[in-house]
Image 1 (spheres, rainbow, N blue to C red):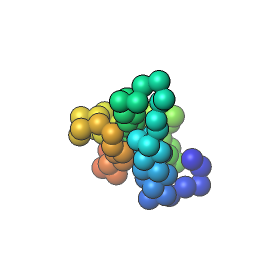
Image 2 (image 1 turned 180 degrees about the vertical axis):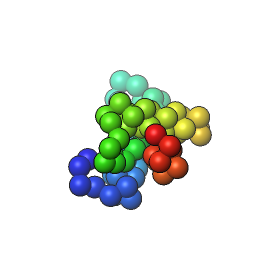
Image 3 (image 1 turned 60 degrees about the vertical axis):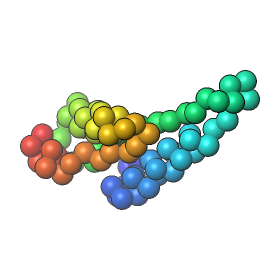
Amino acid sequence: MPEVSPAEALARAEGLRHTFAQLVVPELPDLRVSVSIGIAQARDGVGFETLMLRADAALYTAKHGGRDRVAVAEMAAARAA
């Protein structure tokens, strides 16, 4: 999401998570859909591969935190990357 602040990206991701939680599959009424999302902010001088690694790490943080969550890559990780 170019030109979006980390706070706005978090709000949009939470909105997506909430939308998925409301999904109803008529053929499987007991099915509950959840989504975990990892967010990382692009920075000057940080390559695409590093950005994806940070987003992936945030995703696994969300999953390990109990799933159905959104996690944002830490700023400290951005400086270390």
